[in-house]
Image (cartoon, rainbow, N blue to C red; front, side, top):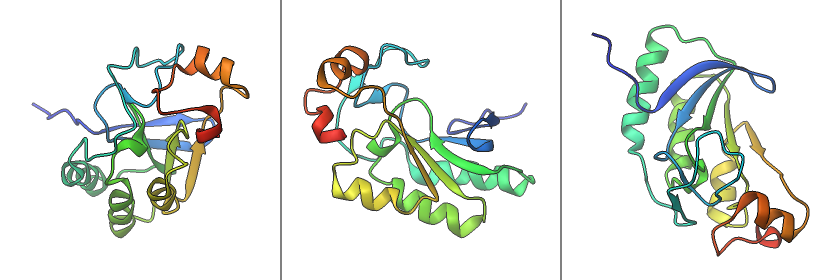
Length: 157
């Protein structure tokens, strides 16, 4: 019986990234927002606290196994079930991915933590950063994104 991967998904066709292999580095619905439209569902842990939510060594082991089987992808995309920049080891993950493959790394983020210097430093390691933008004013941001109480449009914009 084939063992199901826990942290890697796809590759999937992406309009912006071509063939994209997904990497999920936070548990389902750990996010800084609780967006009304989220396809993953309601946020179960709304936070801005960064920590190693998912063990990076296990993510890398799964990724290496896929690469060893001849994986083809245009991008390795860090995204998934919550806000990936909440994982405090995202920079380490990107560094290690770049040591084992030449496939470029992308990050899909809601952008709310980009006000933090360490998040910006980690994101700079990626080849592409794709932040989302849902609102241009605080009232709309609050209605659509239902942010953690420590997030505001001024802070995350």
